[in-house]
Length: 413
Image (cartoon, rainbow, N blue to C red; front, top):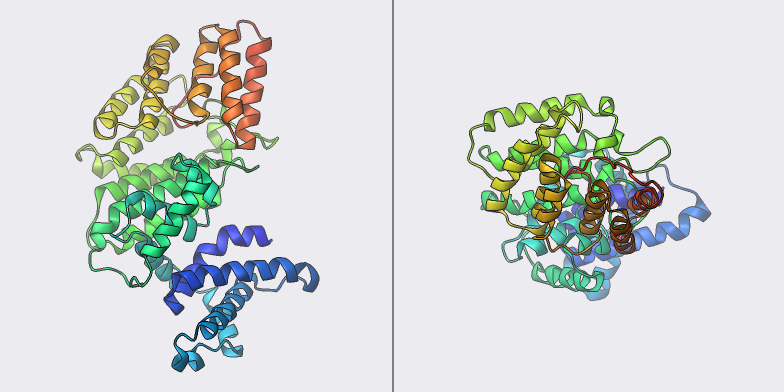
């Protein structure tokens, strides 16, 4: 239970604590202390009826103790005393989703402070608001855990004393918040470590974050709308991503009857008014995802149109990930040989590049080279379910001469 609470409640609890005490450092330390106390006491005393309220109350006590020890705000200490009334208030807050949503938005906007770089803002929000581990954040930014930990520490220091109110320049922070949300969504569907096939809870939090952002914007933002559509289209496949045995299921093998058609419909309804909007990164990615959602099967997908979309996206955002995804689409549209040629321009750390190369080599019946590429991918992969999937594919390439692998897709990695 405690691990689930850490994942699901960390951001909500931290936002409430920052809102009350206006000290990010105290709030984070106090909440960490509360979880440590729960780990010690709950196995002995039993789990409380309302775990989040217990954690909130305990964190408040720890924060008050620290403020007293620092001799900070001494004259206001009576107002901060954690007594029975505060415990009751904690019970109420944890069932009042409106208040929590407001405070979480403020915390997100604080993390998107203009004094921070976009990467620092995104990393800090992933850590503080959504509880993503420092190691997984480092993987998303292609950095080591130690390097990312140092960056997070510097970002926290830069926010010391910053206001915890909705800023006047809300529109100016929209792009940062959108980027943060999409990184969180990516973390949900590409866990870097551990046994989880997917973290649909984290992806769901990212979607909720974008919905909240849309609701408070003074006027519609086409890229925010496109981002929500993109997330809904990808999130609609969550039930089909895991097989009956708990194994990872890639897009070509997914049972499309398990896709959430109502979420696909919602996404398409959002995209329809954007049909003639100027090309933009989230819009182009959403249009690519829509092609997959509309296709009855991988074989009938409009791969040529997807390649065209990637060409447009590459002109706007030339990144290794976009180049890798484009190479996958090229392989489906024009053959594995063309896909391998497209991979020559990709320089991407991690396991995904050799994994794609291995599958393309399989399709060309170059099984020995495919096995070597799979070995490289497996050695670099730290995500248990994906590593197991790569192992199964390697075994097939090694044993089955003439094996024709599954088709690829840019959303499968």
